[in-house]
Amino acid sequence: MNSRHESILEKPRAADQPVAPPPAHQGNAPAADRAAIEQPLFAERETTDFRRRWTDVQAAFVDEPRRAVEQADALVSDVVKRLTDGFASARSALERHWDRGDNVTTEDLRLTLQRYRAFFDRLLAM
Image 1 (cartoon, rainbow, N blue to C red):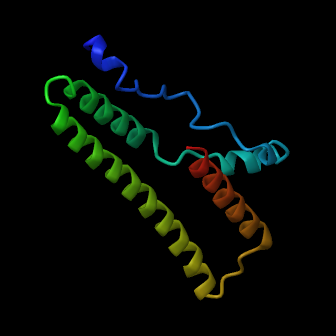
Image 2 (image 1 turned 60 degrees about the horizontal axis):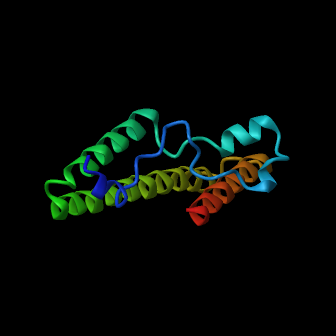
Image 3 (image 1 turned 45 degrees about the vertical axis):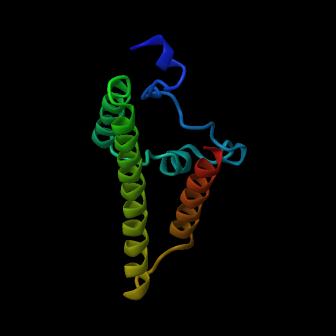
């Protein structure tokens, strides 16, 4: 890659590098709760595909900057859509339990609220 463009483009984050440090209030949660809260936002296969696509976009910038930016916009839109679809699905599943009168325990609700809090904190840390 041209060094002139390297300062413009970020290298993709390594797969093992965290998005943001966990909030301090999660440090006291039991290990099982932390594992449930800190589950990845995407399956490993999806994450790998998103990173591959980003690498392709970034590499294309040198030859076709405008097209690369258009592709970056489309990729970010895809990621955001996938993220919102996943949360809508999880919310719908919880609502179905409530609508059927299933016994949703306080523990289930506590873990759900912790997942929302962790996700909310990750969004604000970006």
